[in-house]
Length: 135
Image 1 (cartoon, rainbow, N blue to C red):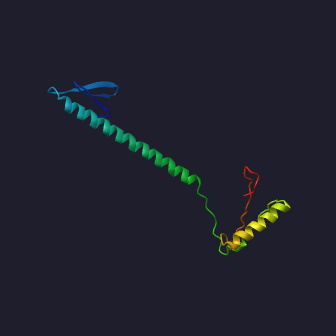
Image 2: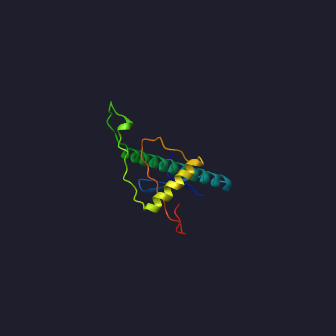
Image 3: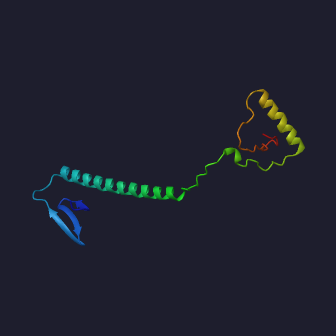
């Protein structure tokens, strides 16, 4: 197959070594057949471009994955309990601390929350709504 090529009423044209070559039809072609050849050539060209685009995309995805891979050394005596989990305390006013304790006690009594058993520390924070009430 010579590609790329174009289908016209005169025949099939292509370029080889920067020279335009025309392969003329022996008989006068039927318009339906020319349109079918045009459609098939366009479909094939589109399929090839789509495959090339996907291959290029996959190549760059693999490059991005390699960039974020980190190798960590294996430690035989590693334990999660040895991880430091202390976080810097959140600065709160006395009123906000009392309000927080009251709200936590209320949520515990309703069983909406439970005490954490996680070795990790996690900070909770309050923000003010538009009405200046903490949530």
